[in-house]
Structure formats: C-alpha cells, structure tokens
Length: 344
Ligand code: AQP
Image (cartoon, rainbow, N blue to C red; front, side):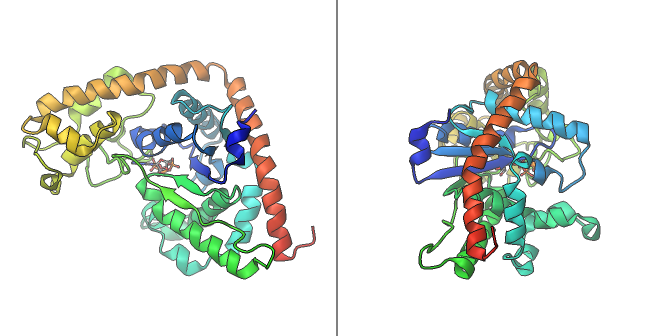
C-alpha cells in the first residue's frame, strides 16, 4: 500500500532508469542516491524504462535480466517499493499512447537540437532508429503522464526536461480551455549533489556510461571489492598534488572527477574534500577513495545478489507498481483525450 499522505501532496517526482546493462557509479550518484533521499518527503514514481532501452538494439534475454538487475539495484540502494511506485514502463501502455500524442505536438526543430541523439547516433545517423530520435518525446510523456512536478536526474538529462517543458506548454496552448487552464504543470529538473556528471575513469572529459566499451572506465554497482580497488588504482590521473581550490582543477578533469566522486560519496562539498586532501598526491588520495567506494557499494551489491535469487518477487514488485502507476496514468490520459476532442 502506497503512503496515502504523500500521494495527496501537490509535488510529485518521476524519474526513470534504463535496463541496459550494468548500473554504474554515475547512475548511483547522479540519480539513485538522490531518489533515496527524496522518497520519504515527496511522492515518487520510479520507472525501469524498457521502452527507452529498445531505442537501440537489445537482446531479449538480456533485456529481461537487466530489468531484474536494475530493479534489484534500486531496491538494494534503499528505494522502498511500499512507499514509492516502482514499475517497468512497458507495463503501463499509457506511456506509449501519450508519446504518440506528443509526437503531434513536438516540432522536428526542437528534436534536432537534442545533443544526446547526436552523441548516440554518431556518424551513423541514417541508421539510427526513429525511436532513438523520438526518445525525448517519450520521456516527456513519462513525466507528464503523472503530472510530475520534479524530475531528479543527472546533468546529461537537463536538455530533455527542458523539452518536456516546451511540449507541456505547447499542449497547454493548443488544448487547455477555461475549465482546464494549464493542464500540464511544467516539470522542474532536480540536479543534486557533487556528482551531477560522473566522468569516465579513463578519460575525464567523457561521461561515465554503460555503453563505454572499456569496463575499466566505470565502477559497476555489481563490481567486487577487488574490481573497485583495481579500477580506482588504474584510474587516469596526473603527476601533480591535489590543489587548495577548485579553480586550480580547471585543466585537470580526471583529478576533478575523482574529487567529485569522493565528495559525493562522503556527502561533503568539494571544498571540504579539497581541504582534506590539498597538498597530497594521488598515492594518498586513491586508497581513501577506494575504501569509501567499497564501504558504500559493497552492501548494495550484496543486497542485490540476495534479491536476484528471487526474480519472481522482483516481478511481483514491478506488477504491483504498474497497477499503482496505471491508477494515476489512466485518468490523466483520459482527460488528455477529452481535451483533444477524441470520442472516448
Ligand atoms: N555519468 C553520469 N553521471 C551522473 N548521472 C548519470 N546518469 C547516467 N550517467 C550519469 C543518470 O542516471 C539516470 C539514469 O540514466 P539511464 O540509464 O536512463 O541513461 P543514460 O544517461 O543513457 O545512462 P548511460 O550510462 O549513459 O547509458 P548509455 O551508455 O546506454 O547511454 C539519469 O538520471 C542520468 O542522468
């Protein structure tokens, strides 16, 4: 039973995560950790966004096991499915239906500006799926279907939330009437913490990402203690000691990244972290970072393994979550259809 006090509040969070391979420290610090901190204060809906995942090719058996793993990871990190809604997106058909309607609101020019499409499609643009191009429209549908007011995400998703706001206000201009002024609230991005963009351990100018071909570029939530220690030891750095101020890190992206990770894991500001380590070399800093990363991630991976022993229970959580999500989504979509003039 979802906490009824929270569901009544005006503020509401929606956020999603793709079941595409191993979750990494970027997903944890940029998204999941913040979700955990928010869930008791604001009614939250968390989705394993499998419809987004198929915008690039996925193997069916891997998609299913990744859906189990990502669900286990967010619960192991501290999301309570009794207090918040946790479900997989394809189980709530209203997402796809509202996305189609928004396809007829969103302009091609708006989508052409989306940097994530450019990065993901790369040089092979002509061969990218229409789904990858329309990804941000589906994301707008995900958020607005629940009339979410806030969307906690990493820095990389900010442009997509801005597009969701454009779609919402365009829909409002096209279809709201005297009884339904501003039908959709414009959602706000929430970008928290010291690690809003965790970078690759091999290249401090590139985002840490599941699809990076080098496993050494990221710390996976399922990595063993030994793997975490090895990857941090091998992480690219520079020969200089750590400076006193953040300004001095301008030309040192790898050092800045590791300090941001430390600050975020220890709930400190970067200035506090700098005052702890300034003047020290990476040979003193890295062992401290290794201990902290293991201390945080090891309990999560052990709990994940336990949860994954019972995938039937994970699927039950997702089914119950989808039932609760549809209770909110169905009336919103019905109202949208009425505003458009569909016979329902
Ligand atoms: N490096 C990152 N730093 C901070 N936050 C990040 N997020 C992702 N990478 C970082 C945040 O994690 C949430 C879920 O992301 P996602 O899995 O839905 O999609 P993504 O951004 O496409 O993740 P990846 O790892 O980059 O996947 P691939 O390699 O498949 O493209 C989001 O809130 C995101 O901001």
